[in-house]
Image (tube, rainbow, N blue to C red; front, top):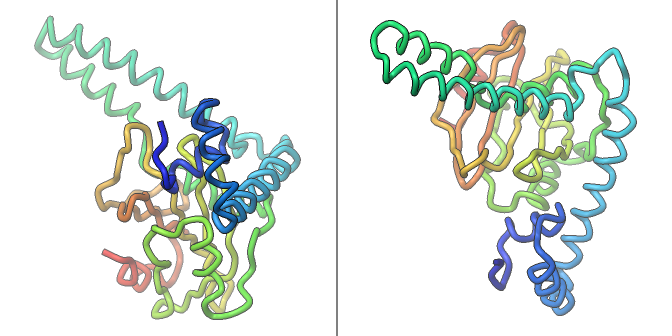
Length: 250
């Protein structure tokens, strides 16, 4: 059941059509007497429609089938199913004890999902493959932060990467199973690209410890704060990598 005035999570749930009929009617009645909030919700709905339209066309290209968000979600679902199966094996092994139990534990760890996989996929999809156009292109020094605040008013501020030679140039709205996400692209004077990605926490409101990991040619530094999970994604061979790490907000 939602509360009034609605939270940002309630509004996003309404846009994503996740409210039951009673909550939806209650929220629509409230929006009818709050035109500013209603205008913001309509803008979110328009962005969501544009996103679905873009995904339905660009991601059908067979050469990039592995980057299809649906395929990504299916892989994550299969990984989750394997984790449950591994957990069952682990419980059985605990009953038996000894070496078998240790092997089951290792198998469970192998199949655990890596943090911020979607941030890495988004970088490959947008920065490397160029499959989806930007929703917003920077026109001024503060424009990107203002654009991001329209959708994530309570999120942390954009990282200042100017010391490493990077500035924000474009933004793209994305969709996750937990709600809207966004990716902000940074570039330096030589055309090198890094991205700042934010999304709602995962299932069961899971927040991330500060950490980093490499995935092929990419590196993701991740953390949580102000109700969201964040990641900075960059190629592992970026010349400014040491300065980038110093610029991160932790």
